Length: 426
View 1 (cartoon, helix red, strand yellow):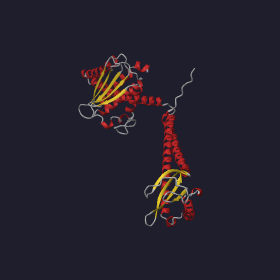
View 2: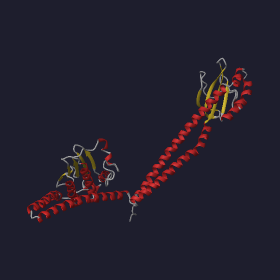
View 3: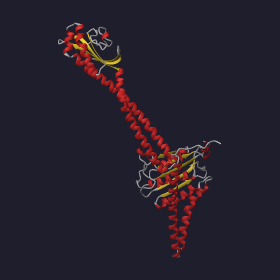
């Protein structure tokens, strides 16, 4: 025997979905923070090298040393100076060179006298670049040194190696990890709270059973309202007939009872004429007829005898038909010509077509899709079951492989369901 397949509860699924979403958001935030930190660190290095290079290039000490034209004397004066600046500015190197690019200073004294590795601008302008020199890849800024007569007398290059930038970035990673961890922690807490709240509502039921429970509730609600209206109407007629009999107005009492029987029988005949009729839906339609009469709405029903058996369970059938009729009764609108029409007929491919239309003003274009969303309703917020009916209808219809469409002039909800045989093979 195969092992029974376990189905996760709705609460567990909610927890898993929220947790996965939280981890994904946390990962995206972490990537964003790392990329932003890398960009900021690189920009900071560019600013530091530019400011330092400009400051040294305009230093009177540097200008005077380069103006003398003695490279060895300039090295003796400028090498200690630039090393102090390197330590103070937290840079990796400052190279002062002649206009031709011959090094006068360098962190590695053996490199002094060699040619500068990097781009020397063809004009006297500042240039920032990433270049691989003797210390490896670095962000560097080269600035011209000008004499008081604006004559080019040398260049100053200040740089930070990519390795140093990476070390700075690594020092900032704990903050990024902390922010990401805090965000994920809050998400886990939210997932736990969502799971707890969902469990209070749905217990350990899986999603399918939760929907079935809602469907059952909606079926009982709409069927109960229908039967209450039918009972109320028949009660009123019977009381009236009894009163007329007591007054010995026998013909009028018979007329009332006959009219009651005739109206009910017309609908009963349509329901029972179906080869594969659903007694629950038949009882629902009889009750809804009484509801419509209570509210002064003309009730129109047409059921084709060759309409096939529904692929839905009796509970789901009542939920779909009942909610669409309730919606139509509410939307029928004011005025003398108020009506609701229900049609059941076979579809061309052997399925079922259910149309529920009404005399109301219709659904505004911007709400045509939103009316199927959970919790959305144009009706009073304290009305029973508001915001559930149409969402449940679409869920049931979609689950059976059918479609639901809304049209206007008049307002009409059309449900098309596949045949029960096709549904059984799928």
